[in-house]
Length: 81
Image (cartoon, rainbow, N blue to C red; front, side, top):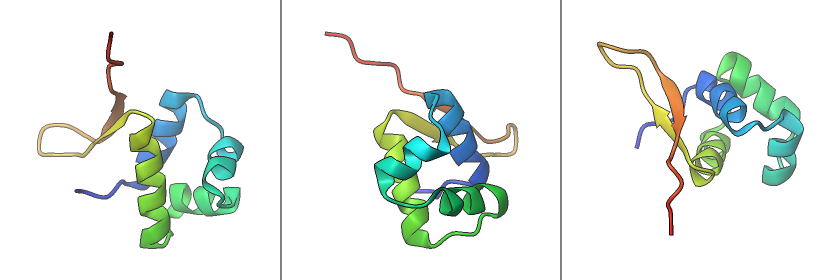
């Protein structure tokens, strides 16, 4: 499993229409911790994994950069039935 990049967090929040305060409250971490990660990639591995698990649990797929395209996110298609 590849770890998320700082921009993944911003993109995931935007895709899910979540604000810093909501993510912070859901995870029990400070908004400053999330902001610090998103701006500088400064975070403990445990915090990074917590954020990644949170977004992936909400249906976010992290797309990592390769030789043909940049990184991004997309949402899983909701299952029907």
